[in-house]
Image 1 (cartoon, rainbow, N blue to C red):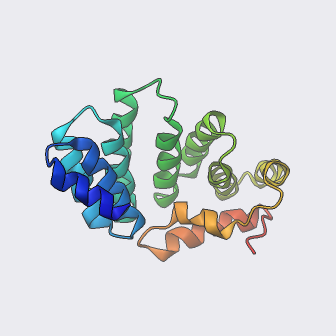
Image 2 (spheres, one colour):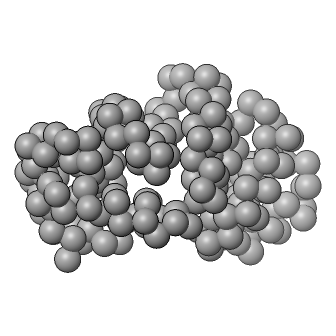
Image 3 (cartoon, one colour):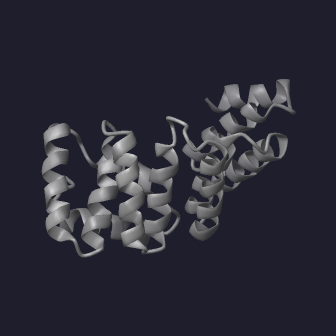
Length: 186
């Protein structure tokens, strides 16, 4: 992915989609600063491209700039309020709100993500953790039952990649919410 994204940028340095793809590749390779630079270039080239704001926001979450990420994610929704992929905004918003320890708001964002993408396990994990961390343990446990029904054989640990940041405590708090809801992480 990285090779093709770089090739696309070289072939057409004025193509915002090429920078969007480069941002995605950089982020998946753990290069948050480079991912943010590519996302910012994508936005500069096309300020109406919602995915540039998504990758900018998620890069900022990784870099410990969750409050700034929320602003980028809000722009994404204003640009495309009816987009069927808007669940990515809601799950990223929930992720940023987890980092900021604003769990009630994280629950609301995760609920929207679950409504839009009910077959994505990581959206349920965000909801479960936020519910537990907001003190709604019984409701979180109910969501664990739903999770096990929908994804009976799923290994949870690989799904946690969606909630990693530079700060190990962020992921540990997230996992604590899952444990508080009696979700076995092993």
